[in-house]
Image 1 (spheres, rainbow, N blue to C red):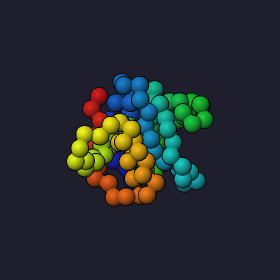
Image 2 (cartoon, rainbow, N blue to C red):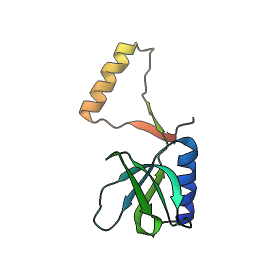
Image 3 (cartoon, rainbow, N blue to C red):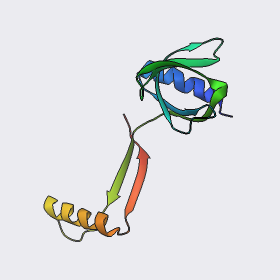
Image 4 (cartoon, one colour):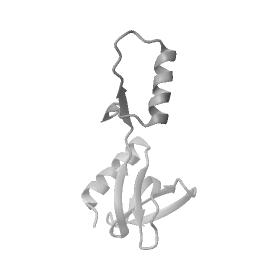
Length: 115
């Protein structure tokens, strides 16, 4: 069961900021739905809006949502390279290409991107 209070807040945020919410729904659906919500229906029994993947207006009941991922916020990944001299951009790109293709260990950080 999902946290319906949090899901309700996420839908409100998505409506206000014109964003999408992500979730899985129903017993037969294992894929993630992406909906741009427009409003609630019933006594906050569910929400409705445009399903971005099939471009169709749909209604969804909170009690049938399997997994709630909410409003997707952008994330920033920063990769740090140790270098003992001032590299050129070309040298950095060459080294990064080697790192990616060789699967060398990386030092990185992940944080939510500030808007």
